[in-house]
Image (cartoon, rainbow, N blue to C red; front, side, top):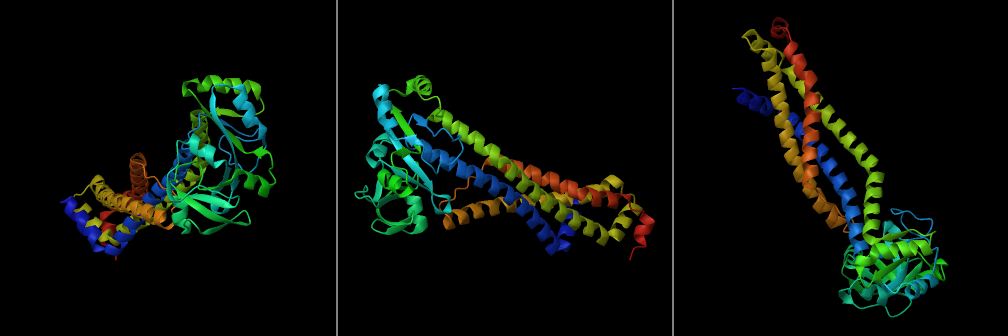
Length: 365
């Protein structure tokens, strides 16, 4: 009986019901997409850093784990010194990093050493750079910018010919020769960071301690520890922003449900009066309003999931450089948050309906 009444009440005002469902859906989609965007960008950055294949990372003395690099403070001679001092080191290479347009990093690298350290890089088009003003880009950047081998890119106020397009996941999206970036940026003889690959990766912690003793002013990380630091720091920095967005989404859902159910109660004042006059309890009346809210919420949650997947597909198609990861755990949290916000929003209209005097309700015009 109650289920049939709830269904008819919702169907009686289809536009209002749809807008209420849509508000809850937008709330859920906002939560999932913002969290998915934050986590997706972090995971993509970690994946590309790990893809270089190094065991140890040395950063400038002024850097932190999560800070992006756009400077070069490490003497280049340190690469050879590390190789000569520590027989455990099999490969050592330096890199310079500059943040280009659209927050995409441009890396100056010794291409042969990077290929060797990462275990080989697969070319999708073209080949390695041969001249000082040739660049290599990854497949995601190439697809987004619609470039191919042989095209020209404007980087650091100079024209670079695209020598090759490679698979993604190898530290950066854009690579140019190390010497070229050092000259263009005025960083001759300096590096942004140094990567080391050991003969035996099980000795990483031991070698890290030795290097720290030799270079006390430089942050030296085992790569796994560095990635853990980055993940922790970035999540801590982004959590406040994510919480603000979640708060805004909850407020939107709360207000819309509150207005929708309050309006519904006003429109059905006489109906409520009739129900109370024939013996309906306050709990029975509140149950009707809460059940209607839960039906709206359930529809909004399902629509919100659909909007989230659609949004993920649209964003990644339009902006290939942006990664969104939708987590099942956060889908559950999004649903719980939506239900709590909606029920709280419906509580006052439900209480008002339950407290109505049947005589006054029957005389309501």
